[in-house]
Length: 345
Image (cartoon, rainbow, N blue to C red; front, side, top):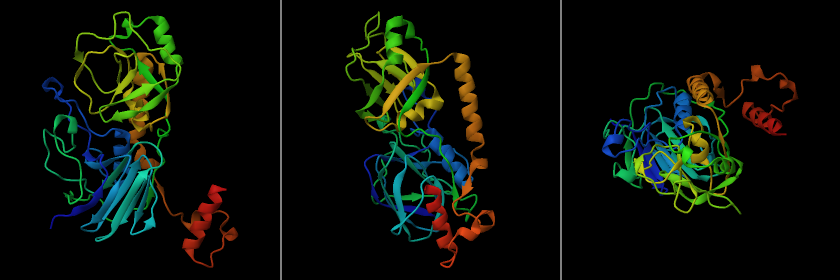
């Protein structure tokens, strides 16, 4: 019998995503895939499965889902209010979702993109080697009410109750960039001003890219104008559009562009841009190619070691040094709740 996740309600930006489709740039199809690929790796670690499996990406707003069979889930990316049959559950953690249970996910409390992972992944038929939707190219479709999403075989059924501490990336911050092929189109004064300016993410943005705005700042300009011969662009490229405004390309960007690129964001820092909510503050700093390679090496090592950083959601009483200070009359659950309260004070 096919295991399914039943969709009762879904926000307008809910799609199925995975690592994307590399290799089709020459055919006019950008890689696509999850806006925050680190969140895919975090979910895979929580469930003990590969990060190539498809998960549900929720842009700003989740939905309501029902388990068609006993299953495991994990929640990563932008924290959202989530509950199972009305009981609040932790984000950045794995949980059991029994058959018939309802999972409700609300709006993002931080960041922009949250992820719902299931044991075995969502197992829709692959298109061009991947299952993720690429709406800009007409590949796949948004998840919507009435969908029954088939699931793959769960590699570790029953293993839940693990938490993970995510890298901070949901409130903007400093983003590292390297020069692009067109950085020299901009004079040293423009480069210096770009680095010195604090930008805010505009309300206009999508999986294709986000616009950056700066208060009381003159438009940026290049020595060759703001229109160039159209050529290949990739996620992370920062174009300076015709009105002198930076635009950061994301996973579902076009494959070519005719605006000059002032720089390119390091792939390991791109989730900071993707997860920035409208109004979040962003700064950009140039690094050398050697520093960029080292940063990517450290990011890869971090992803590879995510499983070793998991922690149980409920502490074992044997691990609590000051156990006698807890009120345990109400049982282990009460002790755990008190432990959480003390940790917050």
